[in-house]
Amino acid sequence: MSSLTELLNGLAAAATPVNLAFAFLGVLLGTAIGVLPGIGPAMTVALLLPITFSLEPTSAFIMFAGIYYGGMYGGSTTSILLNTPGESASIITALEGNRMAKAGRGAAALATAALGSFVAGTIATFLLALVAPPVVDWAVSLGPADYFALAVLAFCTVSTLLGPSPLRGLLTLGLGLFLGLVGTDVLTGQQRYTFNIGQLSDGIDVVVVAVALFAVGEALYVGSRLRHGPVQVMQIGGTWFSRSDFRRSVFPWLRGTAIGFPMGTLPAGGAELPTFLSYALERRLSKRGEFGKGAIEGVAGPEAANNAAAAGVLVPLLTLGLPTSATAAILLAAFQSYGIQPGPLLLTTESSLVWTLIASLLIGNLMLLVLNLPLVKIWVKLLRIPRPYLYAGILMFASLGSYAVNADPFDLLLLLAFGLLGFAMRRYGWPVAPAVVGLILGPVAETNLRRALAIGEGNVGVLFASAFSKIALVLALLAVAVPPLLRLHRRRRTAGISEGES
Image (tube, rainbow, N blue to C red):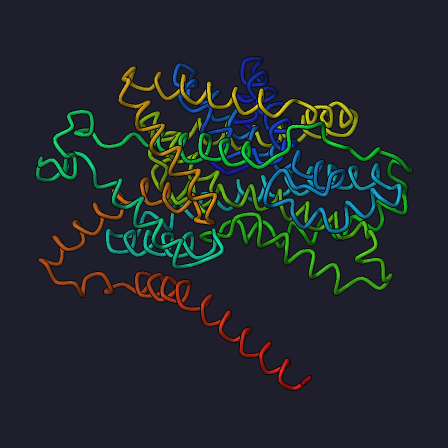
């Protein structure tokens, strides 16, 4: 059956009243969360994971996808009106969007962000439907050594790109890999690193760790730093969206989509890098000299790249089981909590769920457009929620949700311990995402490593036998080595310029 036929079947399933309600709830929550600085989609999905176990999987993932897309939309609102990105991928939007708002063109900036997100998200969803089946056909041919190499590539790229320091990222990854080893070894039946604590014999629950690091740690960190007073919000003024604005935005939307989708599919591509690339491209192509003063192209392109990358992230997640962003890591944990393992067989074993999920992105995009354009003033009012109430509520829901996973008070102790660890990591600039990725993918990498070595009768050379494993491991090595070399080159260049000026 063709991808288009499958997508139409998924659209019919997603259009049922129940799934439409969950899609609406997801985009509503996602937009609200995206507007609030410091609370992103990863944190929201992690927070809701424990309390959605009673839902049917399709409905739960439709809601999670709505939160994911909605967070991308909502982040642009605070970027433009407050110069405070609600999501890391919206940082670039603030450069030109806030200047447009200061110049009295906030309405046009918000309109081009919303329309660009809709256009890019829709195109990228169709691309996702077309790309996913061929990737699955290719992935089926991979062996254990190839999957181990792929996991190593994901480890290295996530650790080096999702954080300010590659070394810190790798050390955080090591913590996650260690946590993944805790429990009973599936092959030997022996307990590892349980310290004679019975509750650890089944391993550390991914949901508890994800909620602790993303929700509790982030809430403690942001709540400790933000002011308690009301937020001063810039007024939305100016012409809503003229024909001239539309003409100037169309091609940046398309170029942003072309950059964002393929970048999102790459290991650790995420949505941050394509927004920077889109902004740099639009600035290079601009002939008006408005960049730095409020160029609408500087809002249209990055916002399109942002949402196209969000769809691109789902390609490796659904077809290979590899998360390339923090939110994707939490979504992978959500799949596993339902006993579903994303990978090459997912389109066969859970075909209805996958295509309904992809189709729901089209519906969610339309809902987001309707919610964002006329109701933006309502979303801005969320910024006036007293911070103590907001973060106390987050901590309460995190505690209740984590306890509900196994109904074991020991999970609350783990939540507290990992929550304080997450707070310390955020406080001192250690990335959180690599730890969760290591915890989730560590057992997968270990299993494939042991299988490959068993096939090769202990010969390590089997890990480098295929062309794909060689390419993946070389790319992993480059991911670790290139960032420090680039920084060293920049330092020498800066020092050379300084000496030349003196």
